[in-house]
Image (cartoon, rainbow, N blue to C red; front, side, top):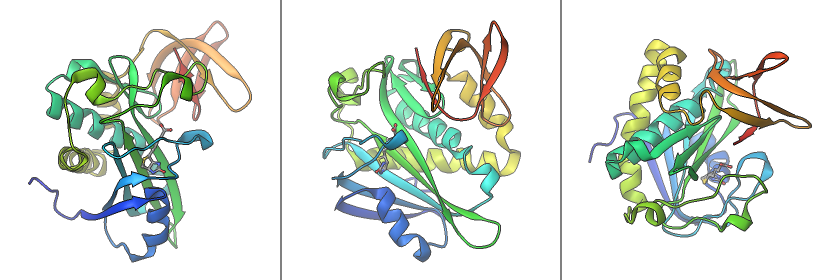
Amino acid sequence: MNWPPGYAHVPLGEVGSTLDEAARRFGEMSGPTWITATRQTAARGRRGRAWANPEGNFAATLVLPRVAPEAAPLRSFVAALALFDAFAALTGRAESFALKWPNDVLLNGGKVAGILLEGRPAGGRLSGLAIGIGVNLAEAPAADEVEPGALRPVSLAGETGLTVPPGDFLEALAPAYAHWEAQFADLGFAPIRTAWLARAARLGETVTARLTSSEITGVMREVDEAGQLVLSTPHGLHRIAAGDIFF
Ligand SMILES: O=C(O)CCCC[C@@H]1SC[C@@H]2NC(=O)N[C@@H]21
């Protein structure tokens, strides 16, 4: 097994949410730690949405106990690249996958994986970061279970016919994450941004960004040095730090 040096693994059975387990165990962790669960009964997604997590799907939270707070949000791009590489390695079909800003992975245009970051105070200037990752390996929610306009949820098994056990997925994901995390630590966000843009969905196409209380439609130009989405509209360039995009 190609487990990355310096990373720990806490395998759990059924839990409410691996993000809650991370919050509970955070003080005990001194280095990067993967917390996995066979099933979650109260998993959450971005923007307060529920995340369905039947057995056979992949559920994990990677805890980074001490990170610089300004670099924490950029870990969603690091995690997205790792997911892309894990999928590509396990399926041999990199061309079927794409990354959707800010942090979804698409397979054949449907959502196969999502990422949710949560910060934790760690004392002093540094913060703790929990990176929650959910992958529809075996099953995906029905299309009418997601919000209107959201991408069709898909599963790896449904789209490719491949059965990948969650443990095998972790064995591909953990070294891929460690690789991109080392790039980030050594060289900063630039190589992460370049690699992410090379795998991005809908670059150069018109998308709608849904913000807290408004929407902006424009052509997706890039993701900037701060990880913001750059849309060009008839009124000029808009940089969007947080939101969801719809195609
Ligand atoms: O909305 C999204 O796309 C993000 C989904 C994140 C789900 C994962 S599953 C493991 C971790 N535990 C949770 O409760 N949520 C995240």
